[in-house]
Length: 286
Image (cartoon, rainbow, N blue to C red):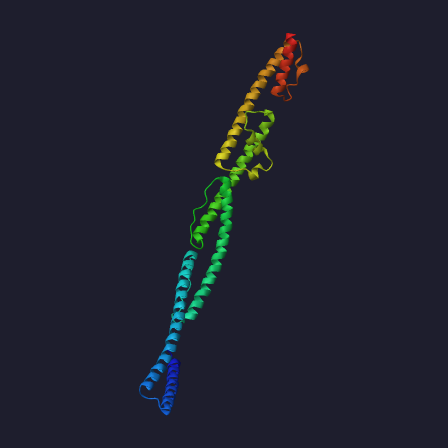
């Protein structure tokens, strides 16, 4: 308590004492004495102490409210500083409760703004990571935090995004190569019902590289389709070789020159060769 407060209390006591003496003088002039005087004294005393007690209770409640607010702010500030890996200078012990609450609130708001900025960045990166993970079928980084991610967690998230981005580029390139092979081979397969029509349709659409999944499972399906296309192409090539030999054999038996039948330098389909064999065989049997 300061010397000014002591002086104020002394002056207040003097004023209260003077006023009480004046009241007692009035009671004496009126002629109040005995039990009536005692009752008046008790009434005055009760009135004064009731007002003091009420005001005391109000001030204690205000003090407790400030103390609770300060404790709550200290917990919040401590949590944010820990998560942000940031340590500020401690507040002085000489601060009043009001000034301490204000200082803590200002520090909390500053930390909260920083945390909000970091969290917004984290959420943006997390969204990017989740989109990549969903398309690649890969897991997201496991990150848990109460209010805001720390620097190490942010680095972990960025590292996983970099990995997923590189993996996406690699898989898109692989899918592009498979797609190009399938599109090229498909032209020679004519209408082959043994191939997966739905997968063929998806893989050959114009925006396939932008929209198709890049999971290991899907790429395995595309690779299997590519291998099946290769296998069917080999079968058709073998069939064409056999049919060509049969056509030439029938042509020889019909005394036809090879050039009169077909230009073997030009690509022909198995269905065309089958038709030629059918026609020649019909002529031969007639």
